[in-house]
Length: 471
Image 1 (spheres, rainbow, N blue to C red):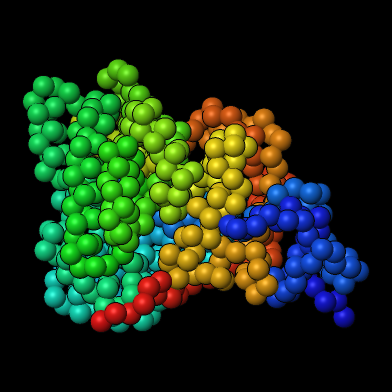
Image 2: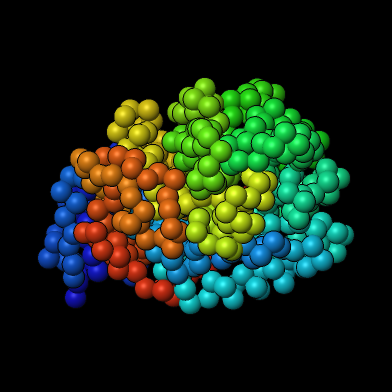
């Protein structure tokens, strides 16, 4: 009888803290042995990594798939296409969002999202919960949904259909503190955005490029400071999502210096796009890159790179939320030349997240390979209660592995990607790295340029609470 279902031999194994050569033995979907050398005769199958880097499968802790909306817009990807795209880019665990509408219970929102995911995902997944209605009845639900494995909640400070008042944010933070959960905050000042939008539109400035002016770094800075202050008042950790600007990063530096427990996230668009990608003229083409916060200038881009390298950012997520450009339910929901404030927000990034950061981060010596693993797999698994099952190469962990090709000259084109989106904001970007092979619980989901995943093979993962229950 064979000891292993699979052995990955000659691996340059990279974890969040170590890098070493070895073989990885896999049995029943989990890593059972890591050794300097394993006997190939003891395995039903052997994959030779040929000295290439092997990292944990990516954990993308911020993506939007088949998320219901209030405005009639429809995202490009559901759980079939989204998880396919993720697997082909080296991600083996995703955490999208169960959206609560106003007047709806959290349990109803979670049940609806399970129906959307059931039988479709080809990789494993967990759920965050978006809270848009923090009534007392909803606050009272929070301990029960946490006990069921939904241990992270997203709060918006902007968007009319989603935003909470500071009072309601405090109530959510207090409930999270009492149960050991984590709250994620979209920090932009809604009144600053609406005030600037009104004035831009009065001047006839409605093209996509003006989205970047309406969503000012000043508004992000103020909301970031306010979110930090609310967390300090309640004495609870929070995660600031999709941080985009030097101004917001400086607020995080300040908070950390005060001993306030703040986690933070950034995304590829703030490293690889700038405000100019929203257009340098008034054409509608720039709508493809409308997201919030928007890409900033090169100064903020440099600040984001520095914050990735020095540990300011905890995790690196895609914020994948694509809307098709040529779809009346997508970017053109309100017509071919709609005002920037009426264009659905979001861009694609699930499949390109890891190759971009490996190419421009690790291979350009901006960050170490170990830091790459921490940002993209280990830290998100820890923060959302999935570690060490996910985000690790260790005995007992799920055999979610990526073998990397790192000597490529590959040009990203949407035709080569596996999303249902009709465009990528990274069209024409050249990368030197791409996964040669992705394993999800020991099974090939991507190999030699071919997708091998099966809809429905991904499992839902209840999350543990990441922090002590303090009551």
